[in-house]
Length: 78
Image 1 (cartoon, rainbow, N blue to C red):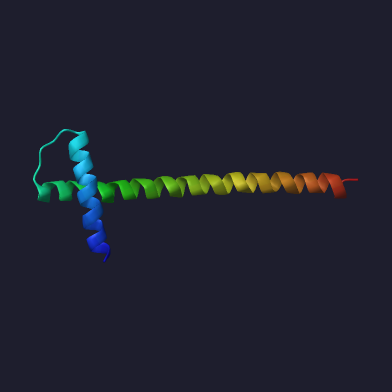
Image 2 (cartoon, helix red, strand yellow):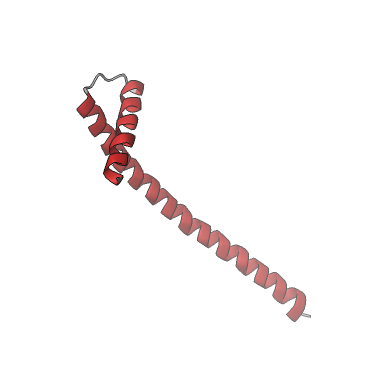
């Protein structure tokens, strides 16, 4: 089922991409362009989400440390 879904999404993506770039291509080429674009785009998006996930973890860790410092100063530092 995943292959069928990839073909459908690839065909749609290839259709839109060929129309945006004003390229005349047959159906097989359009689907191949779409599938290739989906694979490349999927990898790029996955890398961006991973990098942002790491950054989000760092931000969360800093915020957590700030809360701990505030709690320490408020209740233990007295």
